[in-house]
Length: 78
Ligand SMILES: N[C@@H](CCC(=O)N[C@@H](CS)C(=O)NCC(=O)O)C(=O)O
Image (cartoon, rainbow, N blue to C red; front, side, top):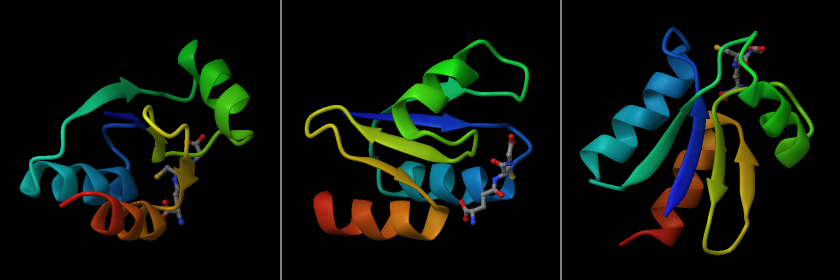
């Protein structure tokens, strides 16, 4: 299972969400607006206030960068 930090208006986030939706990859959505309290969690997990940010809850892998996230998902999901 994955955790995806994202913002509604973010085109990079949309690209990742679209990919995950197309491939039926389930994830827990964490809407992380600039002023949201969960930004602190994002910072603690990844070190940067940037979205999209993916957490693989099985392996504890964490990733920024939409292209890297999609590439990672291509490799790690069937
Ligand atoms: N190259 C990155 C760009 C990500 C990016 O620029 N995200 C913006 C939102 S669209 C961001 O996190 N800005 C900082 C913020 O929202 O605080 C990617 O492809 O994921």
